[in-house]
Image (cartoon, rainbow, N blue to C red; front, side, top):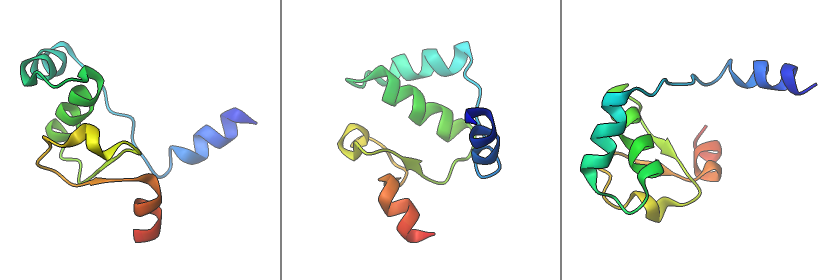
Length: 76
């Protein structure tokens, strides 16, 4: 079932919370895509090692590693 698959997925990743401070910090970045800026800010605030995105070009201003899902899987 979908619930079982999600539970299994959560054994290898953590869902991070988003608060008002992160949203404001994302706005301050003035990136073209606020969603990407928010992902970046939350990742930085939580010490994430890499952002996984199939749209790496959306994170050109990032100072942290960006990998596609395939690159991440290949590295594992």
